[in-house]
Amino acid sequence: MSPRNISNAALIVLFAAALLAPTFDLFVRADVERDTAPEFRAPTPKPTLKPDPEALYKYPARYESHFNDTFGLRDKILRLNSIQKYFGLKLAPTRSQVVGEHGWIYYAGDYSMEVVSGALPFTEAQLMAWQGELEARAAMHAAGGRRYLFALVPNKESIYPEHLPASIPRNGPTRMDQFVAWMSAHSDVNVLDMRPAFLAAKQHDTGPMDPLYTPHGTHWTSRGVYTAYNALVGRLAEGTSYAGPLPFEAFEIQRYEVGADSLASNLYLMGLLVQPGDSLVRREPNRIQLLEQTIRAPTWVRTRGLDPNLLPHTIVFHDSFGPFIAATLAQSFETLDMSEGLYDRQRIDGRNTRIVVEMFVERYLRNHVPSPTAVPEPPLAVDSGVFDALPHVLFDLAATPEKARPVDGLDLTRTADGGYRLQRTSAKDGLVCGPFPMPAQGEVRVQIEFESDATGSLDIMWRRAGDEGFKRNQRAMLPASSRRDTRDISIPALGGMCEIMLRPTGMQPPVVVRACRVRSGLAP
Image (cartoon, rainbow, N blue to C red; front, side, top):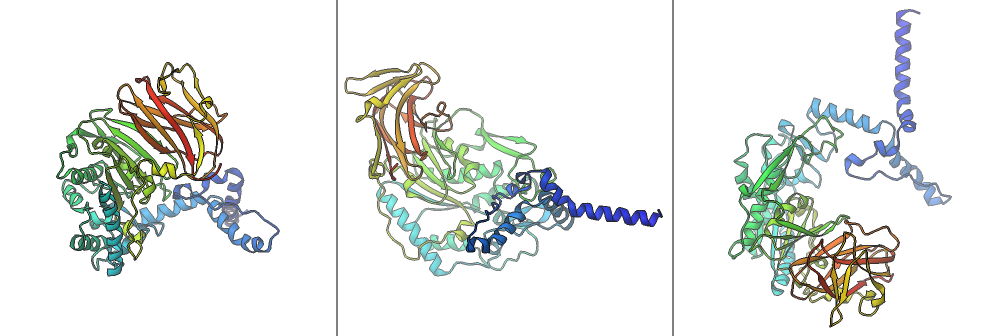
């Protein structure tokens, strides 16, 4: 065989192999190994073929969408495309990112580039709608004795526009420019514009890779976290006797080689686009206590600070920037509720919360559309009003005391007035209440009336009846003191027959439980 024939044969074999490789990959690797997880979205599920005219009509398009998310070598092809565009052409592989100078990556979704260029300004009617919504909210909280703060975090491009590509024009004021100016001129709502604090802190950058925001991501570095913490706590403590923000020297920055907030995974550039990370950690450990946590979205974290003279019970509604600052903020509040997602009045503890904060990134001004007609907000339900409004009683300790039983050696005694005195003796003991039926969806709340011999906390744990043990990630912690207190919390709607367990946290002083009730919005 001549050299030319050998070359042609090799070319044919390679061409056939390239055509067959994606199909071969379908049989070698599972779909999950090449699906859309790096893109922070779920793949389109494979449709089921049904003998229905409408389903048959839609089946080809649905299957094509599924195939586009799972075809053979999908992740490898996307990775090669990203390598060519990012490293070779200095372009972003997707429309949701923009590549700037020094390899900086900016988020371009939610019309971020149009907003920073001034191409999507507010109308006066839109500004009036924002003013009306925030004023109604602030007035309602002021009537309830609560302070209200609306805090805006700048987008990365607002602090570091110099790294944007030259193709992004600057044609006028941004929405944040307009909003801050309008509210300052027309309203007395407490609005915190964090841009001045970030621009001042930016002066201490030592180079393009030592910024307040991660160069390859969208969120803060540790220096950015402290800048936001200092601005927020400083504003809340202003004009009060409460302690202000801790000095920067109270923290240390712990650095690590990888793991920083980055879009490398989203662009299939793992291992090639590496960015060192860091975290802000208080030098004096164990100055906050985790009381309650919900991992399932929307997330919820309640903490208690242990320093003296801290800001009172506060709730912060936040977006994806919240988890980066939560542990730092917790250092400055007696009780801090971090609530993921939009403002939700049902998550506010009307009896105990003294400060309400909305903290959102600048692009929120584009994503959220207030009602054009301002409607006064009704007062929050207080004194357990939210709990009492739930129509279905699932469990009441006073009505069914036979459904409460001590387990694993709990030292349980009854007080003269009928309370339950709980004293821990082992790692797994507690007072188990139930079983009782629970709906699989909707609001479920547990209300506890209790007190302690000394400062401590009470665990509330939940599970389906028959599950093995109570899990630490299905637990809430309520602060306890010598003052009788009534608190209610939301727990997941598990469905089926369920149980809860009450016990002092750790080997703490005993807790006296006076009442325990469980209610739901939907019938079980």
